[in-house]
Length: 253
Image (cartoon, rainbow, N blue to C red; front, side):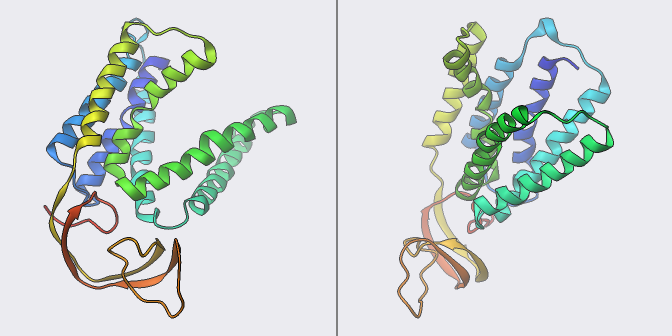
């Protein structure tokens, strides 16, 4: 398939992530937030679309679509783990993915790059994969998978902006339209405030938290300051405050 078709198909990751988050993982996305997400996806599509370079076959289309399904599942499962250490999660995911890639390269008998290329790839991987995955896991923890996916869909626009600064490229009409479209969607998402009276059932789990969070008001034998992790119990609680679909707010609407 062409690079254009590939770029367009890669935009499926975000809507598939939202679909799974809302239908299977009990996340809530309001109507305004859903519309904002669609607007952002439209901007990503505008940025990727080049009708003069569109061609492809079903095998390539199915392969990329399947990859997007896998990423959508990964995003939602990672959200469930996001209360753990993001660095540890990224380390395990990176080592596992790297081992699989090395195994595939051995099976396919691919040529191993020289040490200079390996060094540069490791630096690029540290920033482009390691740091980005850690930050993404924090976003999954704070926002939930559905909202994270909507914001993550702005990546093509950020890439286009970086191309201007790093490569000296110039924007065309499509880039300006896509940027304005995404800005509208992001603005709506940022201004949306979800608040209502809700009930927390009792639960027990182990994750990083602070006692500044009203959901974590429990006692310790010794004084604890700042973030810490341990097995703790949440008693049933009823209150009213602004929230998103993080791990503590998966109630029905």
